[in-house]
Image 1 (cartoon, one colour):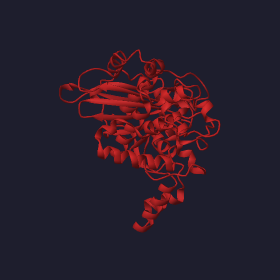
Image 2: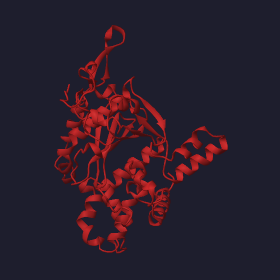
Image 3: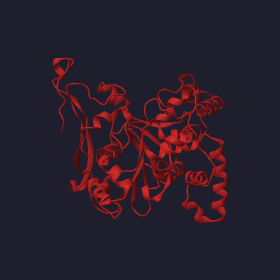
Image 4: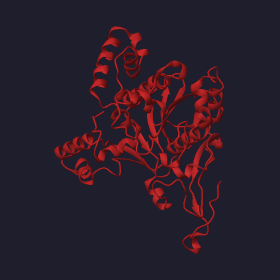
Length: 365
């Protein structure tokens, strides 16, 4: 991925974790560690079991101080252990593996933040995992921190998830948490930034090769022999609403009514977007290059027209008053109506013919 400046107006792009991952590692120390690690893996494949972040963490323990200023008081030894060591889930390695899988699979980002508020009251955990259509082998779902799905860290919200499918019929969901408000990520050391990034990560494996709902599969995963590990116990109380958001998002992407537009983010410079999409071949190439240098990339915008039609306010987790919330409905289709497809039924205004709503109750299905 193209390097992005740590300062300036483009820093707001940090809301998309795939961009944030590289932005928080924008450091010559990371680059050199990646080069050394790549060479070591080529010489001994067993080295692939260790991540780049874990490597730097071990170097820090061995006497190479990778923290700066007063950071050792905030990022003490126990805090570093919880970000990198196996006992706590080795979230550093999980995150690196997940982002690498996403990168190789096409670097797809689905931004559902415009319509994600309508999923808050929609229960989708009973969706059969076998009926979900995963558009890519690995992709990132972004619903946004404005929903305020809680995480184990105060002031940080579960704002999205990577979804990856493996050949053996396993789907991995890796949750990502937002940074705190006004977080000084651009002032921290590389090691400190990696710790903060890893602390907001949790991964769940779901068996999608056999029958069962998302709820059944996730509950089975949480009741394995690892259920009493510190990292699992820390995250378990927060997983159900986050998994439900993943279920809703996947139902939307699986629906024939899904509105998905591949475009640059809405806050990308309009002049450059026009140049990159409507100019001559040479102009398009220059426009694309300039946008990449600013950290902008093509993403999949979801539900923009639907959000406008429902008068949904950007950055709000509340549906407009007098809207009946949308919900997923198992519709029977196909020959003999033998197949079940999860269809989304849009929210509707109650008594729309009587005028514009001026407050009222939100009905949940």
